[in-house]
Image (cartoon, rainbow, N blue to C red):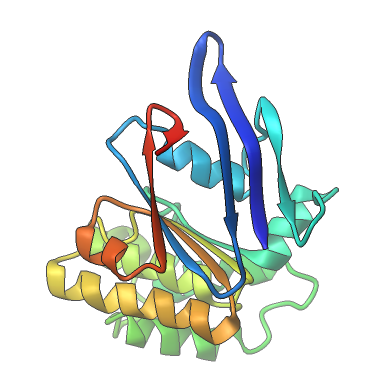
Length: 210
């Protein structure tokens, strides 16, 4: 279980998150809704231990990881809202890039990456990411996030750059990836169809869970 306990995030005099408590069990798909500026992305980053809260804690399986970087590398898959792709690299190279920082090396990552990209509708895996459309880049980012069947999948607006039909396809792929690996899936989104597919949806307003 990924547990966020009484988390508050302040930047100067601004309170971005205010006493947020949320638990996401393995195999559960949870959506976070709310207006722009309500703290959704910050909550996702805190959950993924990319940001340290001002107060409160984030625990994994009952304890706070001593090495957040190692925890992320071994347990988490991220879909960032701005994709965070390397434009000079191919779609496939972006998908397998995290493996290059792993002690296990790339191994069978390339064939799996090609299959994932095909499932996402990317049929030319060796095209540079920089020449892909935003929708295609979105799909590459999702393939990278689920490459190693992570225990936690954290996705920030994963369907924002996609048409309705493709968005539904990606929604099913994310949920299927979580179900297959028993992952905890946390999705921040304005997409009503995506949120409707979640097991539970929580609404964040002015930094507080409604």
